[in-house]
Structures are given as C-alpha cells and as structure tokens.
Length: 144
Image 1 (cartoon, rainbow, N blue to C red):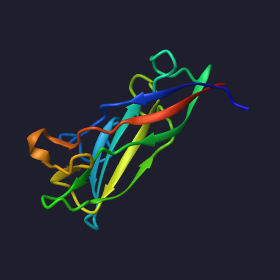
Image 2 (image 1 turned 90 degrees about the vertical axis):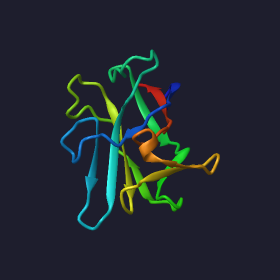
Image 3 (image 1 turned 120 degrees about the horizontal axis):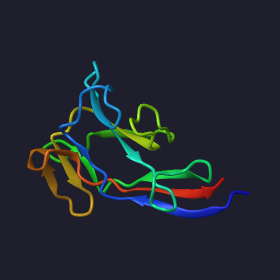
C-alpha cells in the first residue's frame, strides 16, 4: 500500500492569450485545428512536500484534478469548452528539468470571452489578455 504524505494545490494557474502558436514552446501554447477546433495548453510545475520541485527519488504525485471557476465562451456566454485533458507528469523539453503536468483545453472555436461559473459574469478576454484567468490544480503526494 502507498503512503500518502500530503496534497498539493496549485492555484492561480492561467492560460494567457499571448502564448505561442503551436506546440513549439515547452510551457504553453495554442493550436488552430483545420476543422475549426481550438486547443490551448499550459504546463504547470509539480511541487513536492517541501514546496520545491518534486524529487521522484523520494515521492511521487497522483490523482491530478483541475477546477474551472471559469470556462471559455463566446460574447453571448455560450460555453465553447468541449473537453480537457491532464497529461501525465513529465519533464520533457523543460529547460531546467522541473516536472510538470500539461492541461489542454479543447474548444469548439477560439474563445473571445469566459464565463465565471460562480457569478455568471461574462468576461471579455481583451480586458486582461487571458483565455483562462484562474485554474486551481490539486494532486496527492505519495512516498516512493
């Protein structure tokens, strides 16, 4: 049986509109698909029990979840998010070797706004140049 040594919560994660187009950048990007679908992604560093980059020799992380207090939409508030994925933890292409998870959001088309699910407010992405302004991520830390 695995020993749980803690939980990690990374709040304040966002997806800026100024990110690079395509998968050429290691930390964030956006893709315009031929069928009109739009994909945005961001890599979030995974911290260990000491709030430093996780050391896989002594601990590991499992059970990633992401909360969406706001979702991509059009100007009328119609939800454009089709689905999202959380990729397994990797350190591929990271210039400093820090492990991260990738969250990719698949939309029907590029969103111009986002809707706050707590208040119902429709926020114009031009106001702060963000696709997603907040996206808390949680996970469990286990002893190896």
